[in-house]
Length: 165
Image (cartoon, rainbow, N blue to C red; front, side):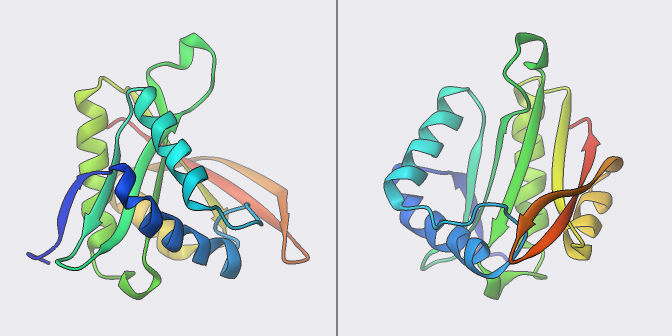
């Protein structure tokens, strides 16, 4: 784990970020996107997050980006400006390694520095690993929406967990 470095994402990371994310689009119900995201679109997303003054971090080993975490606006209305939604994805070969937790902790630290009051994590259910990660980091479940997503010919529930950074 010592060889893992966490740093702010830059445009050059978008190819690796898209590669990681596209696996989850193709293979899982963790994301509700159904079409792969091309590198220019991922770069636009990075620019949007950065433009909102929110963090986007990557974890890298000595050879490549192996995961990322970012925060986005919770809602568009001004009164929500102290709330954010968090996202974390790892290269599928690097899950269950502690890297996701390190990334998430770094993201929460960055959000605390930006005076974010509440962080929400949305989880497509079932997803025991993500629920465990959130709860180990002090998130508590605050909502459960039944059958709000439809992917791979099945209905999917979504739960929301929240905490103050």
